[in-house]
Length: 277
Image (cartoon, rainbow, N blue to C red):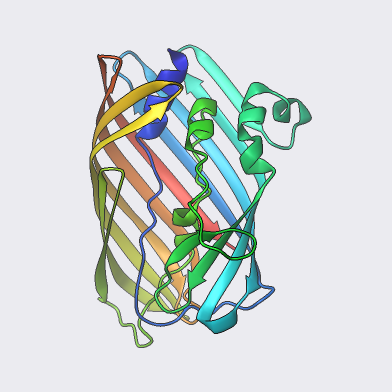
């Protein structure tokens, strides 16, 4: 039951990746970028609260920049998490041998021990998962392992998409656009507005929603969830390279989850910070 509760809490918070359009991305073959993602959330389960904090550090490298397409490798170099609530506390640190050999470590091993690859379209910033040879493949799904271990992290195309914002070449203060996406029955909408430009850095406000109904399979059980949430935040973007420096998003989500005929109502408040260095 505790794993189902952990899953319920973590399902309520997700990092959103949206595509942007306009001017071109500027990346160079051999360029390396460190991505750091920190996620904090507190969930009220009705019967108690649960808090989680996860940090994931990944090393990105531009392997190829031919024909306006950028092939990127992505390797997770560090992953830590702490989950506290419902009378339990569990932690994980990928730098500790005892954690790597634990049940959680074995579940997370496919993500920690592998390198994933992505292709970025230099014109519209679209990100696709590819294999090592560059052929487009399905995004590697680590969801179940992350949910079962209490780790709120992302390591997919949506995470990489946060690295880029394709602004117009002559972007001005007040420029605004809307992004939307739908996946597994959940609709996301985000309005992004340039509030300030200073020293080739654009300061952008984020305001959006995420809602819908989704079904997933977890630990042999079908989980049906209705979700409705508000997302606010900000980001800073280099107007010359179109690379994000930092993005912060706050989420306030209410959800209802049905597992085996039992319904659990939850409210979740969280913050996700992603930086690229």
